[in-house]
Length: 447
Image 1 (cartoon, rainbow, N blue to C red):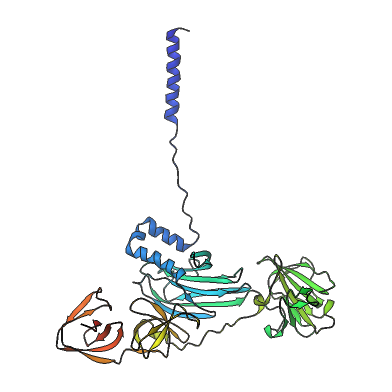
Image 2: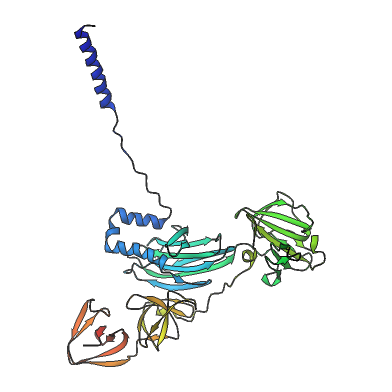
């Protein structure tokens, strides 16, 4: 091969490499798109990408959502609360309750706001660990409906979190109820008809009772407590005439035993409320009064009691007046503030007589109040009064600064000249809350 030919071949080879190199596409790594699991998460993401999360308001909103989980109000169902959320406040509201497997918990939030005015965030979390502050997201409201319904898969504590968008407020009502997940299986009966509970010894302790016994007259209708399909209706020695029903929603099997009549067959599709048989005493119950043995199985027997027995559902009587929400009041005697707990078991903080409070909600006989130091708790309707009547008069003999809040770090509204006189309406720490015909505010009581 001549040098000239070699050079031509080499040149062509290099040219091909250059052409191929120039045609090679640049590799661009595209990040995975953000896919929020709920609209609260989506809203927080928008705060982050717009830079609002780094502002004072954004940081306060994000911290508020965390505080609602770590500092919730302890409640018991049924629970109803009217409350006011100031549009200048970024506080989130949290409620913590103990819920039982077999119950269906419903959360219904109503608002005076039009649906298009703002997005409201209602969420449910299961408490995994208090010490580690670990919470599992269970459910969220939709964009159009502020209602949540969930069934606990185990006896545990759950937290309901409510939050508005930044700088959005209004008056709201939240109702929380616990209901049985299934309908009561014997027509016309309730928990008063239950005569034997889950787990009691049978056959001299050789086995345990894996269900509840519901006593009723022979031929009383047995109704399907849920939608499902019939797995089997084969008689057995212990249960006599029985039905095995598959609960398709909960993936569990329901067992009906000692029946007098069976009205269904294997593979029948069943709708909640259908009559599937009647009460009897077949099987090993021939020597006992007619009753239904009712059991639930899912990876073993489950106590069915809470699945069918209705807990208390009547809300406590409204003695606190919701027209006082948003007003300033004071304690009428030395008392104790129920801190983040509306039950009788929680911690309490002593309050003096004439302590100024801001009423932000009502629940039954309780006012939900906020102190000037931003702490929140509950006082009964008998423990507070309006501030229309003065406690005493204060003569101003030296110039006094009038503050917006009971701290010398707050804004000075005015420097009161002397001689003058102010009405004392209440106190907080070493400050008086005072007023005259022109203005009101806080004055240091000492110095």
